[in-house]
Image (cartoon, rainbow, N blue to C red; front, side):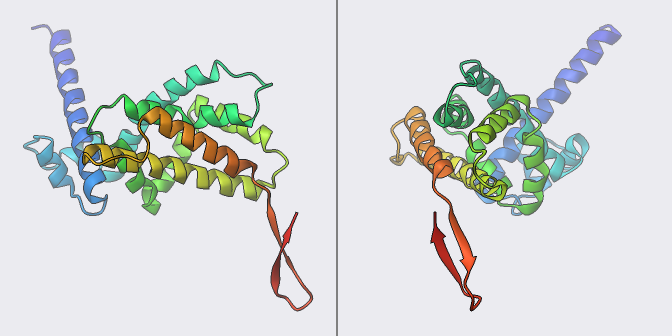
Length: 231
């Protein structure tokens, strides 16, 4: 075997090992939570004799979580690119919401049953440390960034803090709703929606309404008591 062939074989083994670790970690984290799963458990579940395999290949839990999220996020963004190609600047809010939402359930539907990614994502976003590590990286993806910018232009009349808060609400709605369908499919119970496409349509309806809802402004009266001023 030549030096080039040996290097290629070793590189292939490394990639296979990394993928096995990522798959095992995603499944364990999805089922038990990030803090309840040790690197040793992940290494053993991935069939690695070296219990330090997570540290060796990913420099620890944070690097492993980032690698899993990046791998899935890149694939979702590739789907989003196809949705973006159908949009123009004349399209309204609903079309841009579709571009934000639909790539996620479309990708999850391609993973088969059982899948773990939606439930894993819930664990990542409810852990303050990993949420901070991964949220900023997600917005670097070009097609997601372009989608968010397009939505922002259609919501320009909303105050910036309201746009930010509603964007956060929309993210939680997408992640948790998808995770519940993924869980139902894995546990062979009846999901709320009959298909991933039906779930996507329901999410688009709800998030369009959420983003376009009127704003309730809180104002203080002379006694310093807040009351609602509906405008």
